[in-house]
Image 1 (tube, rainbow, N blue to C red):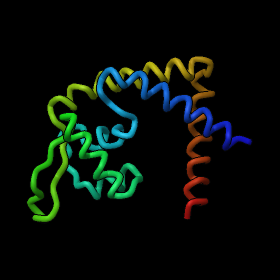
Image 2: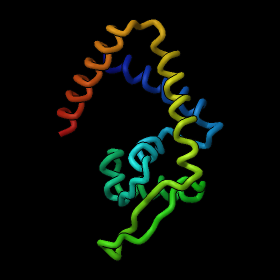
Image 3: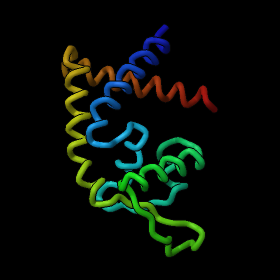
Length: 138
């Protein structure tokens, strides 16, 4: 069954990413937030939840941990007094490139047996599977 194999491989890679990012103080769950806020972006918790594909309470917990760990800070939104904008700290910005290097090295290591054409085909197939999974959710 392809979906079971895909799930197993995803778990294996998730563990590898967690292990390799751990020395930097970065968790896999934080990656969508770090990517969304790079280059000085400021977004609301609601926007980040949509980007990460999680519910707002889950994002609130994630952001609280990231704030505690010095990765993000919040400032009042000029457009909505009940909302705040989330941004990366200088500490988090400094971790972005080392984090990218870790992810690139994992890509190279995990996909070492695939040529360029196989990688393109694999990505294309993954996007098709993701599209099918998205349709199955709705």
